[in-house]
Length: 284
Image (tube, rainbow, N blue to C red; front, side, top):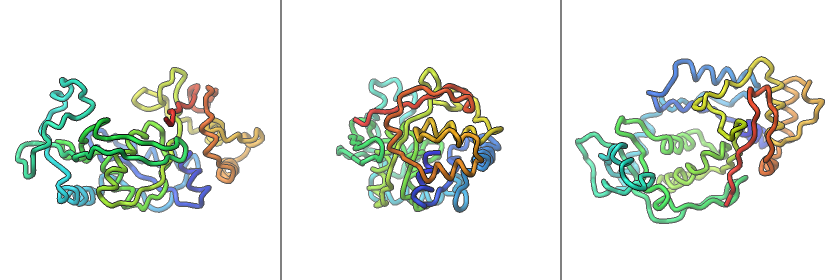
């Protein structure tokens, strides 16, 4: 919703991408359900749908670009072996001296420079992180030949000509990795804005992993009105009885993303099937 309003307010295009590259986790009919839900709530997109599963050749090409720069190496480490190590969240570089070609089953990692990567988030402010000390060399292609999310979305954004990205603050930590890849591939960096998350009354993000109920679709205008309240857009009460088109038109013309920074209270939102709040990450 936030990304839709932000794009339309700036008279930009709003693009839809289906992240279906992790094929073992794909659920039959899920993509069609997502698109139908967007249409139900009047969130119409521009252009065709970008399916990650149809762009393997592009991912392979840009992986080769990094490989030609000798920035990648094969990794034979198993997840189990890394979990057994202390500080396993940071890859210890056990395979860093390995080179291609590698006949054994392997993942592909990128060598990380020991430098700070920074960017200015439109909502969260300046962000800076040293990837080497925070994450270490991360995977671009898994042992099962599936490209990582971090790598694929960088290529997707480039292919789709994305200039502005609006997404949840839970992905703020991923952005530094993606900017690092953009720099190595000489790809233009988009503008970023990470918005607070809708959570349940226990502070847990609403998601299928936590068995949250699907969004109610029987009264779309009421749901959109509730979302505008959650997004701190202060919609006038009389708008609650307006048509979906009227509500969206008002929301687009009155969009004020800066109001999101003040979100602290829990709001009753029956139309969203739970009591919800926003989880805000300190920009420091």
